[in-house]
Image 1 (spheres, rainbow, N blue to C red):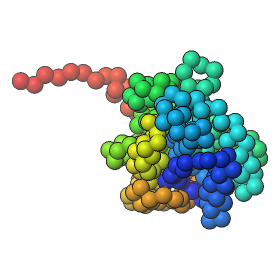
Image 2: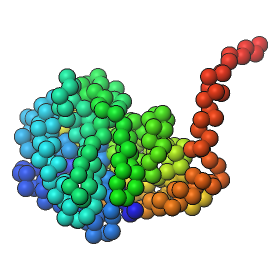
Image 3: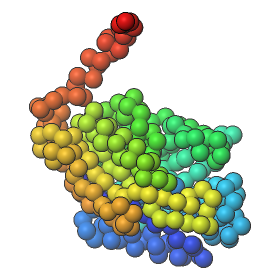
Image 4: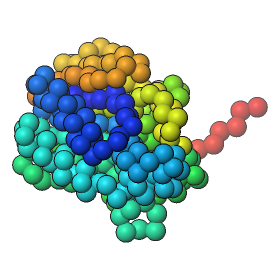
Length: 292
């Protein structure tokens, strides 16, 4: 499959039509370049809060609720574009009031058939839990699609090996991210590359980029798009299938070859995915040794 992953910038929106035009242009560009799977970043939907004015967009809690209220309309737009262009789209994640006491961080996944699903972030960063009041959502999922088996680890989730291992049956793991500093970008990228190594699969990182002084939540963002695989047979020696430019808005394109994934899992130079379980008895038998 050909993948387009975004380094996405936010806009101040004066009308819903402006958002429709923006998203249509992004999707049209990626589809026009042959992409079949489009990946938008974490919290890219926060620009929708600007539709309610500066006071709402600039207030953390008000902006969260403003965006949540607009996500069903956003879903309808994404489904329309997915069908028109014949593509699968992982939409930019958003805080969503899902019926629990606190909102969740949710990324919706849209198919050209008109079907949709979603993945909630599992583990919150300090800012999300201490200031946003965002909580972990529903379980991890494996989406069986016409393109292959796809999973989603939202940003910080990619830094936890056991969450990645739960998606070991997937061919591709999507990692939408929102990171303020360069260190945060590299934490997620290292996580993305590590999950590709462990699961011998392809991982896809999308980033929010740019500075937005009108927002308390996503005011500063650093990153770029990237597509990674295991540094093994059939893949680049660096494991980097594609990488954009730091803080350079736009799409980054790359290929995920399902045959190459199957081959490296069966006959790679190493077999990390197969040998994973060999860790377990050794981890349980760790002993403390004192050397004086």
